[in-house]
Length: 87
Image (tube, rainbow, N blue to C red; front, top):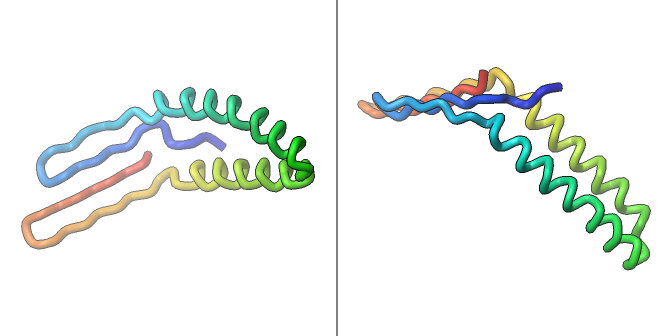
């Protein structure tokens, strides 16, 4: 499963591509920094069995982000338009 790499946002006549692939390395680094700290904190607190719950929540969140590929939102109200597309 691959998360969306770009996002197209169009507000009325102005449209812009947002490169999400630049965001994913930052998220990965933050996750790699957070997991050992969470593991250590849970080990100190005696809640090491809850670490697997946290890991499953992170994997479920990743799966949810990957499933939004192809999402298209179009909102039109009078003379205003908003479009969001994740190819």
